[in-house]
Length: 214
Image (cartoon, rainbow, N blue to C red; front, side, top):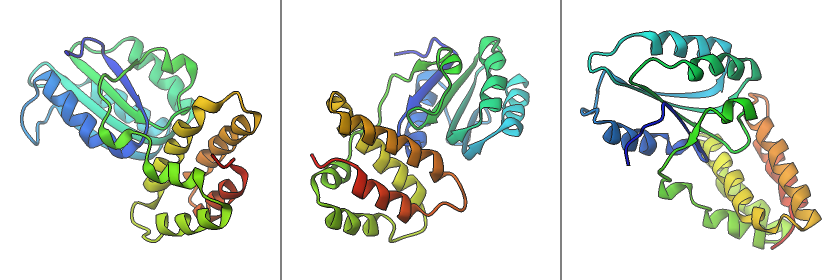
């Protein structure tokens, strides 16, 4: 399937960006491991300065007439999203944007400018870890949390992947008031994960107690 639109979004684990970029690069015919027309960038927080960088970089003409900007962001400020609206409304010919963000990150106005990316990496599926977490009692959930946080490198990405898996597992049961309340707790926890001072252990321990057992 060709990429005929200029802007796409993948809502899921941002760790999937590499696989998404590789797929988009292939579909666009941009060969080469280090193609100057392929830009892959990862952001913990995408703000107004980052949106200015993207607008400036996207305005430059590429050698091939095509360019791919594959970006992931754990969070995007509302100011940055407003700034991106014009960029996505008036894109330069041949430029394709691909955003990988957690569920619920984008404002409806920006989300409406994007199409869902037509490829879901296997790693983005609901994790066995999330299912195990929801089946376990609070004490057993604490043990799972310890395993998730046993290595500081990449721990925020692992936490985000768990949150996504929990959402995917709970969403089919939204008629249950406790499940709806739990989904709200997950959304609140996600909003704190990007903070430098956030205690990931405390945030996950809150979910260990608050989320219903399935």
